[in-house]
Length: 131
Image (cartoon, rainbow, N blue to C red):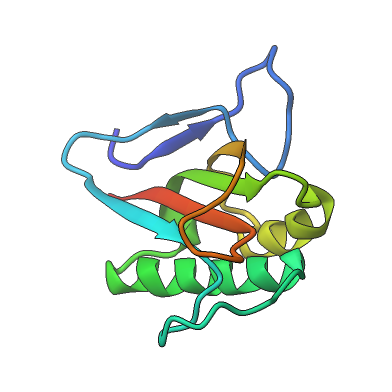
C-alpha cells in the first residue's frame, strides 16, 4: 500500500461526507493541525453569533494550515469538531461540507460547554497524511 485508504465498510452507515476507517501506509508524513477557531491572522474573532460565518473562517484557517505543510483537504485522515452546546449544527454543516467536498475524512463531533477563545462557537483540529 502506497496511498492512504479511507474505507466505508458495508454494515456501517454510508455517507459521502465521511468515512469510518483510515489506513495510512508506512512512510507517510503525518500532519497534525491544532485547534482552529474563527480568528483571523491578527487574532480577531469573526462571525459573532453566526455559526456559518465562524465555520467559514475555521475552514479558511484549515486550508491555510494544510497548505503550510504542503497538503490539502484531500490529504485529511481525520477531523475533530467541537461545537459549543446549543450551537445549531445544521447551520454549520453546509459550510464545512462544501469545503471538505470529496475528501470524506473520518469525523468526530463533540458538544462542549465552552472553548478557550471567548465567543468562539466551534473549534476544528485535524490529522492529514502525505503519501
